Each structure stands twice: as structure tokens, then as C-alpha cells.
Length: 383
Image 1 (spheres, rainbow, N blue to C red):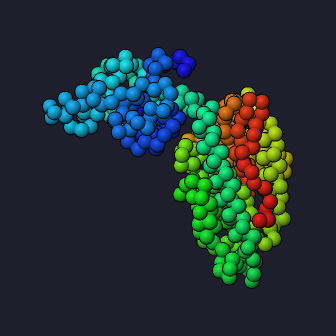
Image 2: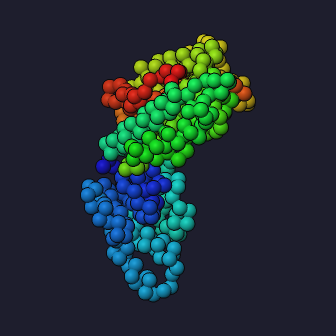
Image 3: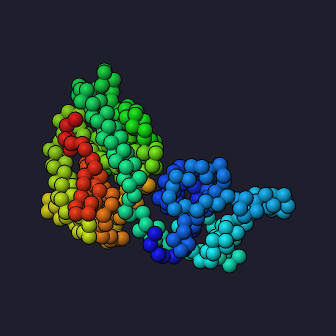
């Protein structure tokens, strides 16, 4: 482990990506993780320690090591007070006097440590950077999640292929096709790959122009269907993310052109992804293409007014233990340089409020010399 400031995290690994990155197993109750001079400490109950012994370079401590039995026997402190006292004793034993913590570090714990001479300082950027380069365990989980995403999209495509446009309606087995029916098929595919996906997008028509509208109701022939899915791998807690746009029946010429431009933008950007490339440079490539064809972008919008049509969002984002994490793929704020083992999305889109939208999205792994596309699914507008 490289040298750096002392570190403390008090959380569970289900809700804390910072802790799951360090302890790659699912533990639902909060525990203390600390780093001091290259030693990685964990204070956790004996019940959970057996699950951690296979992890390398961890020094495990139980509450009994810091007098929990005595504190309970004395009966002077409530349960939460006992927990905070144990955390304080552990920090003192580990010789941690000043540490950086993630922004989610509990305020009451921070107050207790500070009141007893231990300085804790939130450092969002440090934890953001620590998680950029994915571990082998995380990469394996992301790959599994992406296979589930590919399977989910394929399940939706099969239903769309079987749907017929008749008398102004999109009918599947004689019944109107709905977002809900497509979602059930996608969820079944996720489950078959040991992944979950409680919320994702199957929007259509005007819904598809409204950011993260999850989609609902009956689908009509000719309207855009935007399917944006981000399954989570159960074993690793890591996500994938992908989007495709489909249509039942004949698409409008405008939608054909939007789809062509979105695919071109995605392919143009992906070809330039490599370590050291600035995310602003990549976003600018998409903006260049869309602006050349008369579409507004975040780069050309009027100051002080939100952009609702055209290319109104950023190029993409990092993916890992969160579906939206660093780096930010934008030309406007939080500019980053790509590093090996970054996993990012490229998701250009075009939209018109009241009518619909089009978006395509792939998941990309930054390698030592370039990039690997993890998504394995065609871009066809017709299912």
C-alpha cells in the first residue's frame, strides 16, 4: 500500500462504495476500517470475522479486544454510546490521531472522535481517486453485470421482434405492448445471471425526452423506445450500464437521422479512449458532431437557461460500485484524465420535448494502451 494519510471508514459494505472497495464482501452492519502506516485494521464482530480471513493484509480486531464486555457489565452507557467508545479505543490503539474519512462518515461518530482528540476530515476527492482503477474482483463483477445487461436487452429485443404494428397499435400476442411487459422480461434475464435491477428505463414516445423517466404504459408504433439498464452483480456489488433505442414499425426520418448521429458519435469517441485522454476532449467530439448538424449542446446553450432539447446531457460517467461515479465525462465541469482500469460509459443522445429521444450507450474499460468495449450488442434501430 502506498503511503498517504491515515484513513477511517465506519459503514457497512452494502451502502458504502468506499468500504466495499476495500472489503469486497457484502456485510450489512457497520464496522470500522482504518489504515495506519500501511497496516489495514478492521474492528468487527467475531461473527463476521470468519468471512474476512481469506482477505489479505487485514488485521482483524473484535469488540472484546477493546473492553465491550466490561462496558456492558458496567451498564453506564447506552448501546450507541458503547459503540462510539469502542471506535475511540480502537483508533487510539491503532495510533490514529488524524484521519481522512469519506463524506458519508457519520456525524455523531465524527463528533465523538473529535471531542476526544482525534481529528477527522472529509476528503471526497481522495476516495474518488482511490476507486477509479478497478480491482480484479470489481472488473470481474462488472463483466458479469454487463453480460446480464446484454441478456436483458436481448430479452427485450425478442419481444419487440414479435410485436406487430396493427391498426395504429403495437400488439404482442394480441395484447398491447407495454413498458411494464418489457421490464418483466429484462428483470427475468437479470435474475438468470445472478444480477438485480430494481429500477431501469423503458421509456417511449415523449417520455424518452424526459431525462431519467422510467417509462410506463402502452407503446405505439413508430415512436422511439429508449431502454437504459444498469444491472448490479450480486457477488461484487458492481454495476454495468447500457442503452439502446428501438422502434416497432417504421421510424420517422428524424429518428433515423438522430440514431445515425448518436451511433457515429459513440464510435468516434470510443476510438479515442485511452489513458491520459481528457474527458473534456471526448465530450467535445460528440458536441462537434451534433453542432455540425444543427443540434444544440451544453456547449452552445444560453447562459442561465436549462437546455431541454438536442444533446442536453454529458457524454457519460464512470461505473463500478456505483452506477454513476468518477470520472465525469463532460466538457463543462470536473474535468478528468482517463487512467487504466477506469470503466466509463459513452452515451450520446438527442431529444425533443413532447416528441421523444434517442440514446445509445456502451460500457468501456480503459486499458493500458487503449480501450475495450465491454458491451456486446448491436445498435440496430429495428429490433
